[in-house]
Length: 205
Image (cartoon, rainbow, N blue to C red; front, side, top):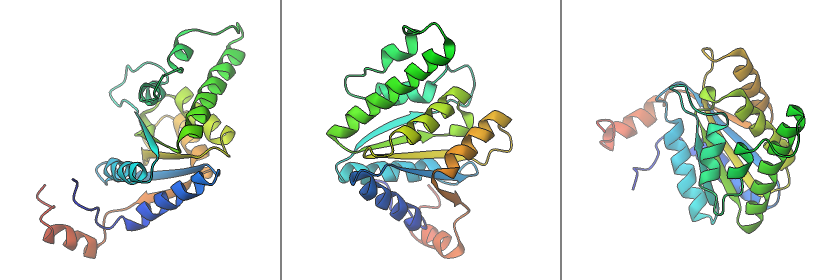
């Protein structure tokens, strides 16, 4: 078991509340934003454990920072954790539409419908980690899904680094996602929390 998370109770409480509201049919988006090593992924893992205890199904997708990943990589990962993955076929075929805009809409709609269908069986926590490294279409699909599934029991938990280094189009998409989300900017832990970490012996870990 992980040591309890020190100094992040506010963020965890937000996520717990988001899960409760989503259960009631009001989808939620929570963004954790901060510099590398500040604990975004750790907090997401803690949220996943919390959601599982609360009877949610947890899906993970992580952007690949080293480059060369296929389009929609975070979504492909998320889809791979879905039971009976209907989404797999969506990435490969261009679909019936020859018009690229229409083909893209069909893809987005197909993904959103599949997520909604799974959310009817159990509330979902969909975690997207390191979105500053995602491709623009993946981010557009996050925006589409959060807007189109407002009444589904889904919590979208997304993390990214403060994105000065990111491509302008990536920054633009992240700021759109942020406008619809509860955003936590994770600073360094304050002194009391740091001392508690040192006393718990966790600092050496």
